[in-house]
Image 1 (cartoon, rainbow, N blue to C red):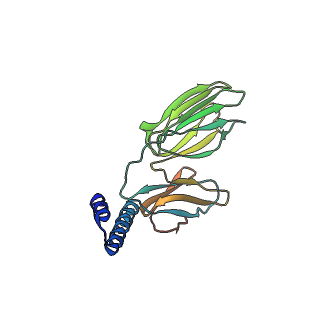
Image 2 (cartoon, rainbow, N blue to C red):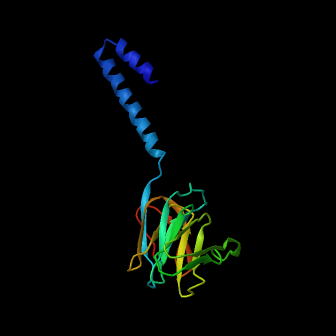
Length: 209
């Protein structure tokens, strides 16, 4: 189409026809630009507050559900002062977590289940001072990480099935950017317990729990 218009333009000797053909070319490119823009979903922001205090994780899953490319990121949880640092971490499905032992004593790392599914429980074994252990989390849900040597130690890892997730700040506020418009299942995890609601994201959307 574009080639035939250009050829007709070069062959035309009439100024009016020439201007008409230039206008057609402009309209052609405008149409292509509009088609390209329409192929991309509008990305917005979902924000709000989780009441009740304490750190929480908010994760979104599209409705209907869709698969996301697994993450290839790596993050670290330290064991320091007989505590897991941080005590809450939110990651995307497929992320590898490195558990470092910065204490002067040995630690064991295990989780009895993932969101209640005992088949997904795992024991990484014992790591001496200065050692590290790694695990790639491929199942979404909440993981209560424990140490069977020091039962007072605990942490929570929340694995999101999508790339849309956030952790609340000290006031309970959260913000998830670049969320395509649509309907989502929003789940807040707090102290290992989940609350789920459906939310429609259109424009900058507010959601409080």
